[in-house]
Image (cartoon, rainbow, N blue to C red; front, side, top):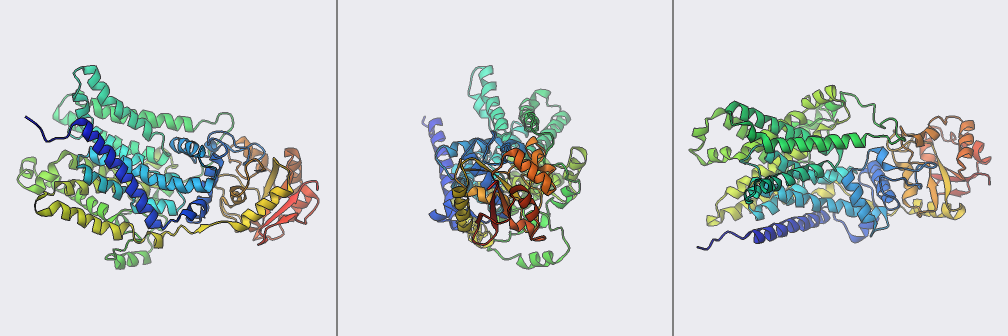
Length: 602
């Protein structure tokens, strides 16, 4: 007897096509939403301010040297090793290295990387929604919604390139399903196809371990958050098994999910914390426990449309809320309205499941939906994650007990967005096909998503591309005036990565000349990482005499003054330059007078 179910090969081809479709549509939506033209791709986007400059610097450096190797073009005289700045995760470093083999400009490379984050997130999102057991077409739709969530656009607008690469979040969601038990474990059926017990265990366990390893290659925020979310789900499963006396063997695969992730994350934290004889202190060691309060999330902003949404039914309440004395340091959660509705559904599931007996739930369609193992797992994961996300939540407890380095607990919103969208995907998937009901449900989702997630992006977060002509012209003149390999000491002296604003000089502004320089021509002093031996060269230079001595010892051949750093004392740079060069007449000056170049020993 023939079966209408597709063959395994056909299923794989369908899923491959679905993942590709989700990736392509997500990138296309991002291009349309930001109104990106081909010319924009090779220019510096001013969206993100100084954080964007930081990431353009990291990507430009990656075109000249692997991120975890020394780049002599920055951090003169010792060079910059981005590893010690704790800015680039392992996965991004590898992607940047691959991109650098075919691209030779940091501006173009970062802008294309931004678009790649939409594709990567859509692919892993599709895998997660299929693991939740919704049909391929529904998985494509919700993978796109997850990839183009307002959270993504906000990250790019804030200059957070590596936070925009949240492809690991759906993979963590898959581990949540494994940790929740056999009824939600998407790999259970894989292993069941093999006759040999060893083969079954390998088929079941290998993808779990691989997912854990992949998650550990992403940024610290995301892999720590993933460990917390999976840990809660695993702990709930442990309690369930013990209470029901189901036998400890039932904990094997959930424990593998949590254990392999915890081991991978722990190893990553240890390796990333090594100094390798150069770093002796983390550059961020002055964060306070209270910052976990300031940067935690809020329920109201999570459940209402974001600032760029064209769905205006909550605008009046949002404006009234903004008038109050609410904490303003919290980052926007970036939740789509569809995800917010899904979160309300999941909170309702917690209430209904608590108030109603299991047998009574089977009597209605709503009860049967609530009883689905996937829905219950998502509901618990949502409640657990929310406990860390919210102001005065468990995130503050972590800061007290473990340390305050992880402070922006509001970024857990991306997990909540994933779970909310998964709940809605299950609802849409459950709608029957007859009378065109499913098509109507899909159309309703799209009708809400387009004005909510797409049409207002450019208005809320314009990318504002610039060609940087004045800086580029100045750097070109400086390269003509100075010999190749010349070390240029930049005033005011400033450590890398962030060390605070000096006058009108923002963090990372001193990297702007480097962005427009020719590789191999000049070596810039900016880029010395605080807490490393490289910054020690400049750390104690506080007087004109010590500055002149250090310039001489490093054999620098020029001094560059960024006058924006001396807005509070316009002549403050003169004693330093005169001591080091014997002259205060600039050899090269930018058109706007911001940059002044002085040759040493002229």
